[in-house]
Image (cartoon, rainbow, N blue to C red):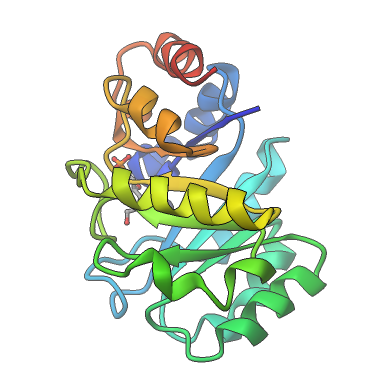
Length: 217
Ligand code: DX5
Ligand code: ZN
């Protein structure tokens, strides 16, 4: 079953409880939390306090995407805050194998994220340990950017790698996903779709998520 994962980065933080509950009511499967530190990416979002507060008001799983330096210092903190999935970037984590194993040892799902310019081939020696791979289809840092079309080739290549090796690994796609392109992204092999502005800025969130689910089923 493919999953729609609205990113609360595009929600109105002044009424976050209402926004999360609305996304849940509209059919969201997972809540995506974008953690940005102003160093790895040129933006600051929020930390584990918000994740923990969101965890108290929703029964949906929380997917924490770390766009920060020193991810290893923060794994336990986000786990305690209620993360069910934690993903870390390939580009700034030197001890990726240790980090992925640490996340999995907590009994939650561990993901490796690739920036748009990082090739799928970099995953050769880590993919067998990951529960999911997150393909960034925009440069990380901001919501509301345009989907980079080359990401489709990366998703296809990754899907082939997973199928030919029989890896137990899902593909998540993040950035510029909307009702228009979600079918093509799904057909390329994606299982989880992060949707920030396309869901939170939509006039009818239920209808948007319904359309998305119809397109990927
Ligand atoms: C970007 C974040 C995304 C972002 C997606 O750095 O990782 O999760 O919120 O937003 P949209 O769907 O608007 O591109
Ligand atoms: Zn994200």
